[in-house]
Amino acid sequence: MVSFELEEDTDYVHRFLGHLKLVRIGPSLGGPESLITHPASISYYRCTRDERLKLGIKDGLVRLAVGIEDTRDIIQDIEQALTRVSGPKSRSHRAYGKQARSTRRPTVSRDQRRRLPSDAQRMDPREG
Image (cartoon, rainbow, N blue to C red):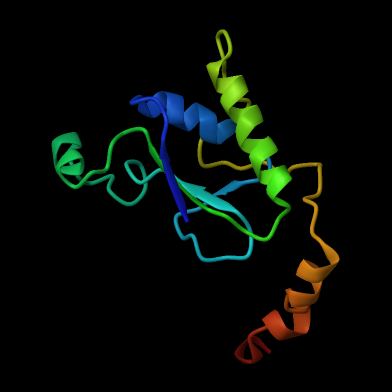
């Protein structure tokens, strides 16, 4: 888990999240894939800004759960999103919370593939 702060502007953070291609937005950060969340919009949305600040949750705070994708792919995705959101008149091509599928497949090493559960292992036996 990595936490970092962007600009203290919720709109800026939402635009950044909208530009991510590999890293997915998720309220729960417990999967094999890289997931990112904006606590001020997700976990603490019912709190006032002052209440969040007292808890240390600033508007620019982002939490990233790093998955099994190649580290270079994750870094490249974050860098390209930061570049796009910081550029002149940056606009997201999709709304925050509506992730589009990336056409580029993440790089997963042979060792990482061996550790992934097969479809049969992932299936819940109660689902039939």
